Image 1: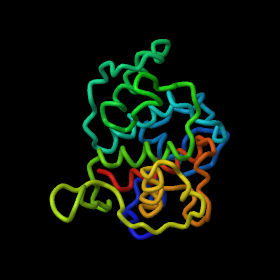
Image 2 (image 1 turned 135 degrees about the horizontal axis):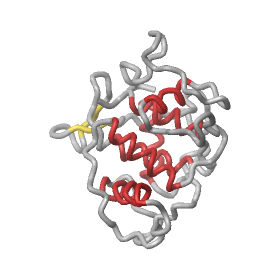
Image 3 (image 1 turned 60 degrees about the horizontal axis):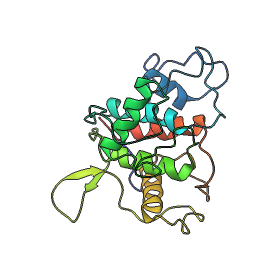
Image 4 (image 1 turned 45 degrees about the vertical axis):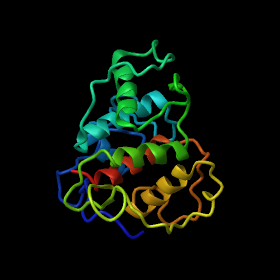
Length: 219
């Protein structure tokens, strides 16, 4: 990976900065980190459910909280035309609409978000990659020009190398680009592995790793 963050958003070496979360079912500095920043509240006060899948409505909450912590400008959450989210809480509906306003999601169709569906690892890469481009860069974060060689910059990597042998078939070029970018930024949970497994369902533990590492590039 060529564009790692200089600093960690989750320093554990200095006692007391990022305390351990009070979860009895997982030991993870990344989970501790996103609990500290208020990105997760756990599935109960004492459990995180690290191996559970992440649904799209849950991811909307996680992502908007991450956006808020990373210095992104948060939209008002007004209705964006999704017809399948009415049965969810106001907080969830607002988060989903904010993701559409931020450009982090386009929905599963023009009028559906599919909130109960599980998030795949391909979708996770798209979500995080798009969100980082809306965040404010931190002192050790990596940025590249939005286009060309001059003008505005955003958090991403333009490096085209990666370790993965299973992403070349992806139908969306954006997906492969996002995965490669996140690998070079040091965001993925498989930095030393040769497979990314884009069709596999995202777990809550892996989600924590992506989010904690992404925070390191932001302000």
